[in-house]
Image: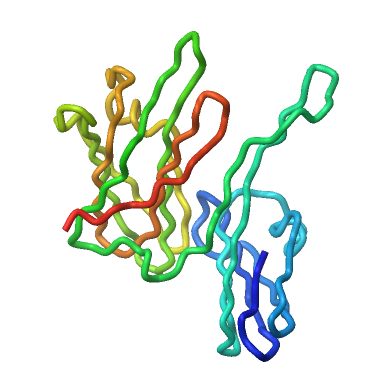
Length: 213
């Protein structure tokens, strides 16, 4: 949903960036009456007539104040095909002040990767580059209890690109032991970064980066 907090009609530009492909894949414009909220059951499908995973950027083109929030979810069905529930999470809109900045270290806390008889728990990381220059993101893994470094990897994020690495913990350290972990991330340019921890029931939570200074 997108809300217009201003006293005049909002003119909004929507840009969709497909995951793994740099640059704007689709663009469109829409309006919101003063003080109103517009809701979409499938915003990407409703606005662009496509399906896909990516980043949606909303820009007010006439100085009005807008805010947006979304929800992603999976639908679970039983063996008869009947819907028995959903698992998902709210996705609040992010502002430029939430970009991680070069020269600083940020922490992503409370991550875990487990795959045993009780089910699977996993942690992912995603980064979106709103600029035009390529940015390198260094991701270092630490044991949550001992604080020992367990290795690092780098992600290359081109301008206008969303990248996601699933199960980031075993990507860095295949012998992680199933314990709680944290990540330290450092970037060569501004990026939006989030981690996601998915529990054994398939419910995800979003983990924002915390500044280390």
